[in-house]
Length: 99
Image 1: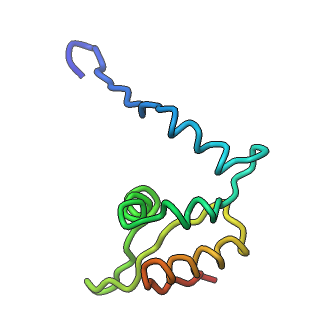
Image 2: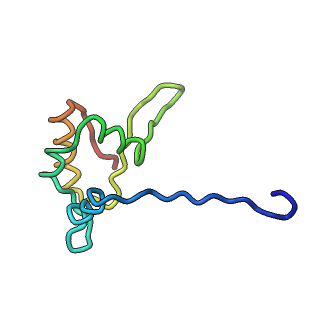
Image 3: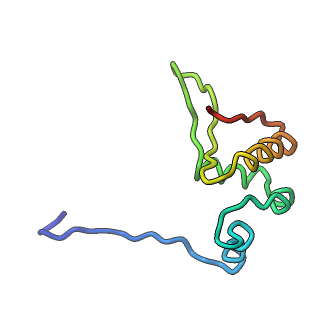
């Protein structure tokens, strides 16, 4: 704050027709679903890295990494099971669910 004035910044993602078009893939009828045919084609190492950067974190104990967590909020248990299998098939990663 300087001279009683507060400085603030607004950050907004840019939109693009390709990105806007993904809404219909992920939210048909306004409810989130996992478009597995889309993921079969487009989920690659870079997309996985973006997912981790946006919705992931490491869990560590005593300075040792114990697991990588990828958030799956608002995804059904059935979809999570298919997603775990897809991550194993595409990347040889072993994921599970917590409690």
